Length: 222
Ligand code: DX5
Ligand code: ZN
Image (tube, rainbow, N blue to C red):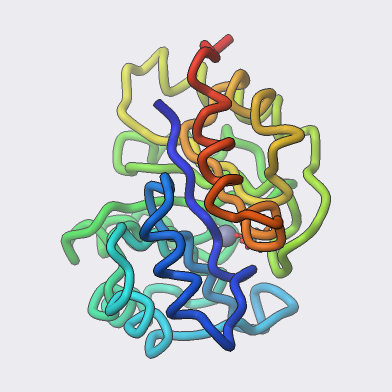
């Protein structure tokens, strides 16, 4: 069964606690937490203190997506702040294998995120070491962008490799995901759907989460 990870980037920060509580009470599986440094991506979001505050209210795991340069320098502080899954960008790591090992040594699940232009073939040599791959389906930095359809092919390619090698790796799709495209994304082989605007900007976020959760129920991977 696939999982839903609402992205808090699209929450109303003036009532973040209430929005987190709303997701606690929904069918969502985890919180997607976007950390942006204004260097790796052209936007700044929030850092460890906010993650810690989110953790104090959240009743589901924190899936922390680091869109920052030099992530090694900050891994420990984000684990201390409460990350349960910590993902670094392929494009931000000179020594990706080392970054992954550092995350695992810190005792949390390790993920690698790929920008839309980055081929899934580039992480073949670290697949054995990771728990999840975030395939960006928009250029990272902002919520509310349009889903890039080429991502569907990347999902299939990655899914095939994972299956061939009999690995236990979740494929998470991040950016522009909503009720209109979730089925196709799941059919391609995705395991986790990140949903920011499509959840928080909808009239009934809790209902949207359950609709997203239901979509895959009769969907089999192709
Ligand atoms: C984009 C972030 C996404 C973003 C998704 O850089 O990584 O997680 O919050 O937002 P939507 O679902 O609105 O595209
Ligand atoms: Zn994200």
